[in-house]
Length: 333
Ligand code: FE
Image (cartoon, rainbow, N blue to C red; front, side, top):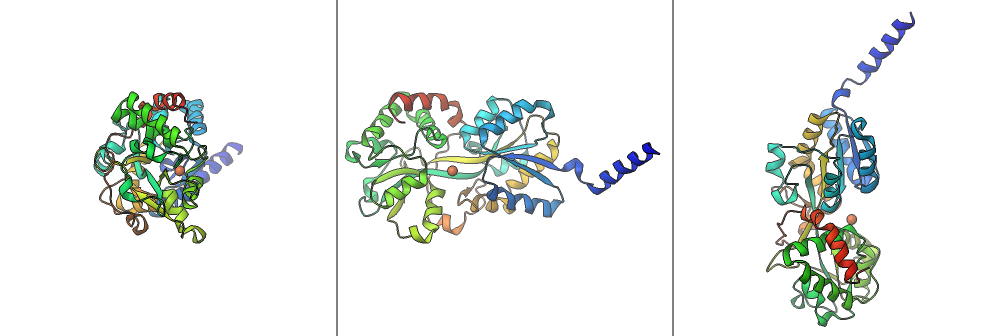
């Protein structure tokens, strides 16, 4: 009798969740408010339930490592090629070869081995106070090191992975020696100590404490959307248009090494790269869709078009350690 009851209980559990085999678990370091609408849409369309575990990138990677084969996670979502590369180095992702993903996501925005794919693009470019600086005075990240910007430049701390990635890409293009010169020049030109985040730095440009600085575009978008800041005289300038292009980075995702639902995980990523999901994924954070066939949000498109750096974003990881040491040596805190 006891046995029969147990069997009945199990049966009931199985019928209550018929899609159990396809349900997904996502570990994500992207803001929950940016992920939830996407998950809800996918569940509404497919019936597939998704469990979301949110934390910062580092603890999530450590969790995946500690859980190993018994991890319930199918997908890791995180921001910045530097973090995604770390995940590959620590063996928590697996290669995916999908014709859909390879078609929808440009080569430079995905891991050469298919361990992660970029799903939205953020540009890290130059911003300036429009009452103090003319765009014709601006050109490249490297030029921000020139004497003419002495006491006028503002930057976010070098501890931010965004800056480590920018410097890593500069090393890839210019070599370590030239990049060290550039970074030293930045340090010499600082108007004040590095800021804790991009938004504070942009505000300082807006109120004239700094003439110029470097920020991700979506922070600018968010700031200018706020009524109390919309009047700030901050301009966006697309850097390095005559050579390497603007430094771009991604929000990306990969299938975890021991994903219990590998096939369903790949399907979800394929959906994420397509028309329906791309705008949702990018627009919520004022980023650019990674799929070039999809137009950005009108508010983002209003910033104008630009030439982006097409060197593979994975270089941000490959050269991350070197970038950190170089910034340290150059006195960039
Ligand atoms: Fe950010």
